[in-house]
Amino acid sequence: MENQITIYIAGDSTAAIKLPEKRPETGWGEAFQAYFKENVKIENRAINGRSTKSFIKEGHLAAIEKTIQPGDYLVIQFGHNDQKIEDPERGTHPYRDYQENLYQYIQAAYQKNAYPLLLTSVTRRKFENEKIDSMSVGDYPQAMIQFAEKYQVPVLDIHKITTEFMAKAGDEESKKYYLHLPPGQSENYPEGITDNTHFNEDGAKKVAQIIIKAIQQSDLPLKNLLK
Image (cartoon, rainbow, N blue to C red):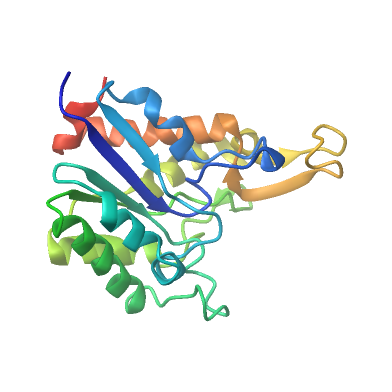
């Protein structure tokens, strides 16, 4: 068998593994394993509610550093909770501490001879007058791209691709990818829910497909690990 390679995902609730009481909410990282060869293991360390700052502060990046091996990958996607600048535990400025934090993530990978891969934040479903808001995650996607160019780190602009995908789907059709439930349909959400940030199972699979396609179309060595 080929060498075992682990792909670590550092991120927030949009990627994270969900508890049974949160279903049908699903993170895109949960759908990732199906696309990779047998010798590739997905280690999904994404956690609900975390920003680049709180993920580091709580020791989750340090935990990855302890086990990540040469040749492994560290996939990094944050932004949604970094936006919460009113929260001192999580909020970051896109062109200051957000970028400083990203530097810590890529250094964690490089110091272990692993490969970092930055993904800009998946879009929120925010429509106004039938037009999707391309700034639904603020300046964080652009700040990540600027950072990646400065430090020559691989980056895939998933924010742009998911925004375009949801815009094409339209205001109504795009609801089917997010956690939109009427009252009485789910035991976990008896009163229903309208959540334009988190995905349902179909949405998570679609976003995973979008990320995989972006990897396939890139010149990253990671694409050689795909089935």
